Length: 328
Image 1 (cartoon, rainbow, N blue to C red):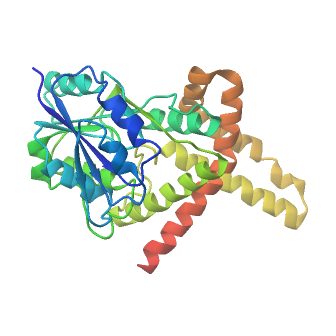
Image 2: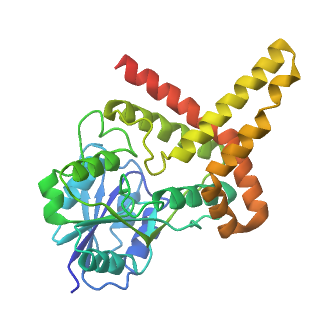
Image 3: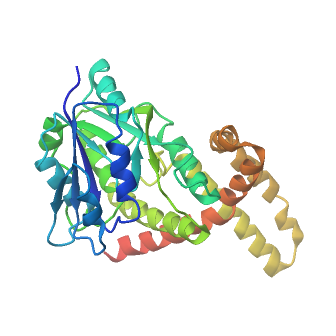
């Protein structure tokens, strides 16, 4: 049975992507759905683009954050199922059907999907990020959280659980509001299920600076939330055990390089190849995902980036987040 689905899209200054997002949404092979876009007081002209499509547009009078935008979309929806995506995500044509089928066949009320391995924009840093997220989000059938860039949930359960947190702490931290929401669902006894075939195609437009800035920002918010939730070492989606080990081995290697420089003894460098080999072993699943998707040359470059520059951004964000948490 095809349940009526409300696709809810928060938009803030999404002029570069919202048209593509809506084009993809209305290309769905599913028949019974509506699209609701909540414009979070955008400063660009994206609302004019949204008005060209047969969706419902709700325009907020002041910038209120992604959580409130999603909640208002849900409040004004008609669907038995709510399907959340972002304004820079393109629904695959079978995504709504897969959500409906999965929820009914498995008798569950919430299901998540992920990004396609190859994103909309096919440059190195965007592909790296899409494979990275796809791999870590789909590692577990019942994950620690489901991301709101691709999440379907029974509308009654959404209202019962209270929607996404809008408070000053969680609401401002884009990227963890869905983690906190997922944790609330789990504490209430609800299963989180990941369908690794339920895709959206993300528009990253990442360059090296944007990739590193994104990693630092996400890490900062993750640390702030994890410190409050007391689960710093949890193997949680993209804040995975592998990523944390990657940062650990990187920091150990950096420490040895500094000792070598100051003490002028190259013997300190001897363990670094061992640390690198251990890091590759623990991250072999991600390395395989790089290889399976884009082959040997990409794997070499992506692995080098992941083990050298990427940890620097992660540690920078983590330290800033830890300091903010201590101060607050």
